[in-house]
Image 1 (tube, rainbow, N blue to C red):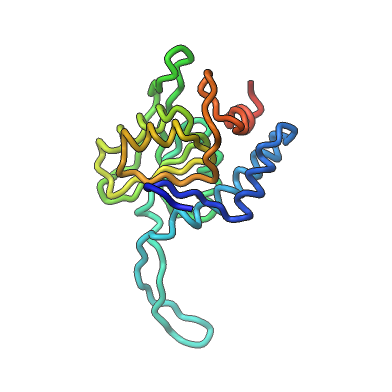
Image 2: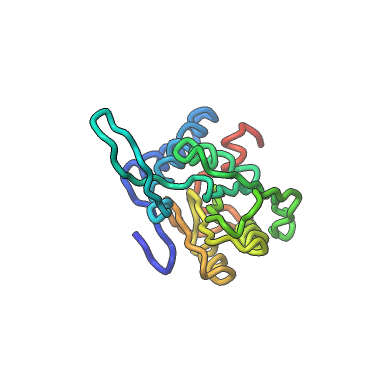
Length: 211
């Protein structure tokens, strides 16, 4: 499904794995494995329009010209710490991609994003960026991350999350209407603590076994 630059990846395998991740009884190990698999599946859709180039290949029978992507032109940017889980899955599919990290934490009083780390590859103006974070909830972290990345003038930016909600989508689209959002589901709403309902809890805590 696709609407206003928001792409919901509703493939049955994506929805199946997301349902298993929502279960509060899922172990840390199981949650982490499912997140990795889900990220790999989502990468297929997110990179659908990535540029390719022709190369010469010698098959067992003859030489031919065929197409490959230039993974070095892609940058996966993980919003720490929870983005790591999606990043690992995506790198399994596109191991040649470059990687950037943005460290943001959510101020518990204001729910605003506070940056503590920012490290990107060189020559970002030549690269296509895919920003990853499991949850697009208030949107504050995603908005802040994209704002910082735009200072480096990359060729394009996409945002990928497992889950979002109407409030997160609205905030992101208002701040960055040019950045497409890819997600596995748009849930009902945010609660007063900034968590998505029904959601799947705190993705970072569930991934790393912390509270």
